[in-house]
Image (cartoon, rainbow, N blue to C red; front, side, top):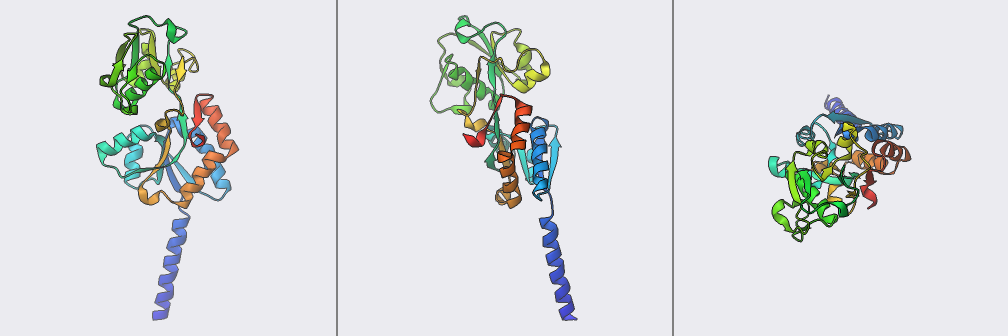
Length: 263
């Protein structure tokens, strides 16, 4: 009887381990990143890796779900967004690997270059701490302002040390910036929103940021204890190196992205 029970227990344990191994990797994302990930999921299936893609409609739920263990990894956020989420909610989450960086630009309907901007030009940037700093970095890259050394993406208007053209910086909600282009001389712009609005060419920015701001590279994020999950590492390798996934990224983002893992 004892031997039978031991055999049964061993069988249950082995069966449990096998079932665990067959569990799909659950990956959370948002609509902007879903199409190339869907191709990566298909490619993973060909290699025997089951991946379940969970699409969220907001930017809060993916981290809540990840922290609760409902999904194994998410892919939708860069480092500044992750750090802000951790500070606000106390999540214990870590970046595992780099994905793409989606370019953000400075757009104008009134001027063809920065030299044409008048003294005192009205310039719109995002008003939140995550995107506003990115807008200020773009203005510095364009040579319009100077920021305190080292502030990086945490820059605020208080960190502007020089403004030789006396530009008037107006802070607006990020989703409102595309509409502001009719009223201002220059605005921070997000190609995805511009494409949806259909008001002008998303590739027409006077200046784009890129891998010179690596903190904005989208990250695969997981709980620390799952960061080394072989399923996750295999999927990341497929996403980064599959020709079919690269073709899907090109189709989804055109020229307005860069592979962050190559920088």
